[in-house]
Length: 165
Image (cartoon, rainbow, N blue to C red; front, side, top):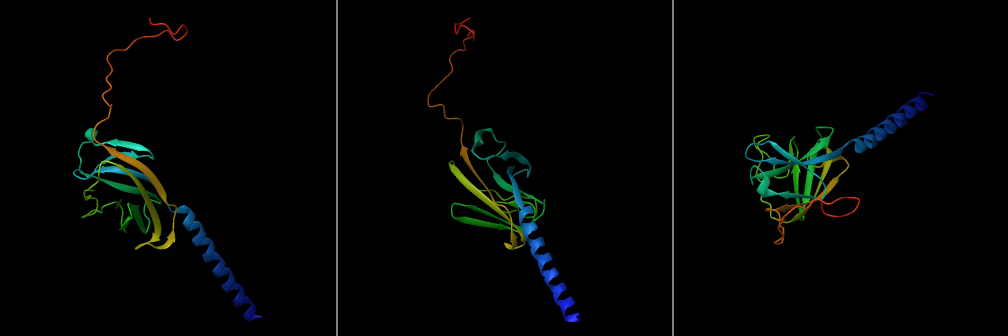
């Protein structure tokens, strides 16, 4: 009878570990990407999918991107873009790293569209449970391209009659 109790405990322990790992994978996620000023190390703006970032309007062209996670601290985050990968093992998780911590390295970006993916892991060095990745597409531009179009005047129009006022 002691053998049955011991075997039963081992099965329950193994089942408990499986449940813990499954729930941990669901909890790890990338919540957002943030554009940061690599000179002042301050956040500039959240980068949403489809964003066009006009560098002419930024406080600096020395920028980096960080990934925010849930929970706030995970084991590691892997950034992927243009067949490149960058592993970050400590908060803040920055696309080009930071040294000392929080002093962001400048990202040498081009004026074009990027597709960026970040994936969290429960342990350092891309080990442990893989969490929920986040992918966004965004574009760096220098000034707004109006293709030679200028606004020369504004005209008030009656919404009911569609006639000028």
